[in-house]
Length: 263
Image (tube, rainbow, N blue to C red):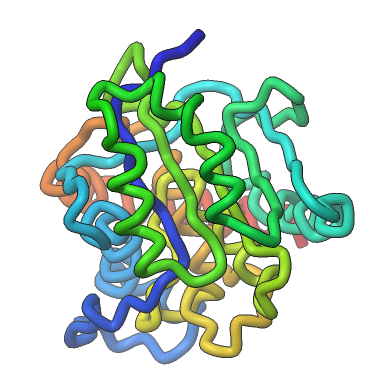
């Protein structure tokens, strides 16, 4: 059994603390994609969001999947969310060069529940036995739950390489009025980006109505960027900036070509 040693937490939570002056001129999503400063502003915010959101664990490097994803959906009335998840997957799959299969023995699992605390308590012993520090999983969960709204996502590194993304477990409150929107955001976040930021430009991730389930071109471009081979798990944010500067123009061209093929 794969042993996970580090836990990072993803969640849907208010993020006004990330507000900063916008260093770009774009006023539309298409203008943003064409403006290097706008894309970097959005990309960096997403890369840093989950590492700076809590005081539990701060890392200074990126995480991304480097293996096939085995995906499953479980829990109360989970079946009613399957059409939504299929739609979300279809929106993003063309821009992520990772094989994703439905598999009961999953390394990416979404569980719908009407009681996140109870569901977590049921799986806590299994998570705890795979942690390096006894009691750490409960401490992390309690801190993150105090900030969470509608979901708690647990992102674990790969035991064979601590700087690779190894597994994702997301608990979603099925009774939350924005459960569908939250599902879309949590699915997106599971690939190594941060999730909800209220000042994320031109993005589903900053939708204050919490009703949108359609990703913007920029959302797709950021995932496409992250999964370029030049970016590797474990690279520091400083390394990422240097690489971004070198590959932005060519990657933008490839993305727009792929986007055109999908239309």
